[in-house]
Length: 431
Image (cartoon, rainbow, N blue to C red; front, side, top):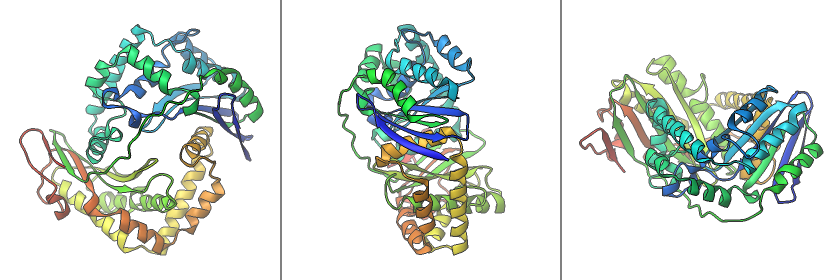
């Protein structure tokens, strides 16, 4: 049994909670509506840099004391940066809510941004970037978004780039933090064994001190640039991403996108997994995922395969795009609905995922979207309506292909040949 409540702190911060009486934990998240898409070219990576630095000491606590305090009660304190938001969250037993809120408010309000910590964390982030560069099945996704969103902040890596991270100074960090980490951009969500009034009282005492100010940050709408980018590397596998533009996060047809992705590459029973891995043995890992934002979206397929099978795998992905656009059996749609609903309900048994849902609902819909409404909309999708969306979205002519490894153009589907240019050097690309 759960109950959702919403309040506004005295400085305008929205607080949304969900009481889950049958569990013992609470997860509290502070969501700041600032991410990599809000960064100028010279600021690339600064949101992620700030995320790291907020754990490196406050006026009251050293970095080690922050860690010790949360771990002394068995809790978890962490954060992540996305393209449209940054989240700082803590998970504790319900008896430790007061400590959790005190820790979160301390790092958000009282962080020192000491020079010594900035330099240490700069080194850590540079190693993080290099780790991604040494992991091609991670790197290919960054390259894909850089290619398809050519020149737009949304296409830049969230971690930043080495040149930018080396050039960011303390004054840049403090200026950016003061301008954008304010009450107008903050949402606080919590889920678990809690009482809304008590949470709100504690948050008013702590986060009520966050300055209220409104500084607009112009954000342009990205434009997709279908292209092919092949990066030659001496790897055992070719890692590829093949994707197409879709609808944005809040579009009424998003439920059809969820189902489309589930059938295409959302599990072991999906078309791509069965066709490419189970039937032909051409890949160990093959899947699809949705990347949906406020004003754009994309559906991306990843696969890791041999150099000899690269072109064949690309052909099979395009083939499934075409086949799904032609239609599907009602039985397959029914199975996808049950899979999607089941996965969602199982995932929402945790306070972490409930907290995240509350925040994303507020960010993208300005309201809580009830589970009954989501389930009803999924069940309402028909095969003709799904085919209509598939025909619009799964368009090979609008697709982008990015691959890393011992790649060559031989045998690629005709839809890509006009987009490919072979030059000298390691990188082969044409936009």
